[in-house]
Image 1: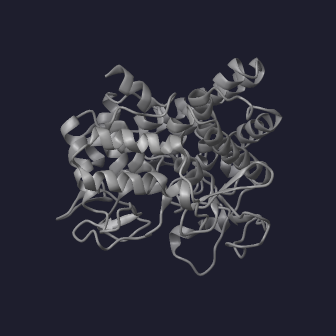
Image 2: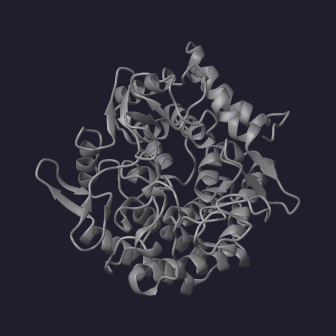
Length: 440
């Protein structure tokens, strides 16, 4: 744990604004302050090379996904805090280093110390903690670099390294459009639960070309049932749009911008043709996964990207009809991972025990709702399911919230913070949430 002694004045200013917005809710005030500074106090470790290493909390490794989501709310304070902006740029630069080392890996060590899952049957290295390939691991660094630019005006991270990273991502996503024939990626883990390994000698379930790009694992780090993970492909479309804008407006590289647009269009067309399922009750809705051969997995997972998070990510508007149909399904018992209990109702994950709801999913449900009373209801649920700790957790029992997984889970604390800030009218500049708040 990298405990810092001094909280930046910019973060204290944000905390004061939240307290002013909720002047009589002392529990919320205390929870927000604890959760908001948790990432800064305990997980950020500046490096001598100017980059920033970020642990997830109770696991001493840096996930490309988690690290981006953990620091995202700080972009609001970084608008007027150059040191904080530099710290976040350090996160982006660290992510770029890792992607260049191995774009198929999802989590990395601070140094090449050989920690983590070194016995997995895949192309491991001592710098890699885990090599489960997930599309979103490559989406999040692009998203964070884009939002850093929009929040602070910084463009120094859009250098030759960024261009190399973008070329590597584009190449990988194109290879994985035809995973069955073109991909070099294999992953097997011995003596584990089924969701921690890929079958067919590490190749995963069979897919055919659709235009979408293949993913071995979900953002939960669980194996995909079918190789086209729809919310992750939605996220890829969005960040390719970000990359297109960066290439045009900052790098003045029209050729690279065109490559981003072309791949984005192919993935988007694949989603629209192969990932929309006509449900007899809910109508046209998005499947969570498909294989391009007529098989659909109708569910959602608490981890982001999720189907519930589609407008939060920027795939669609908050009132898109197909999304709203999907949302009705996801927040019903027809979704196998939607739970209702004495303390809460919401979406969980096959990654955690049955009947466990995730605070990340509740935050997303709140931020994608357009109903003020619904947002307030979710806030009250989150306040009363902290298990008496003042922090958010991974999953908690819907009947007994004092039973939970991961006491120290920075991503969940950051998502709660972002939700509370949105209720106060604050969001990260450049994000879909920011644009929606400004419109309302």
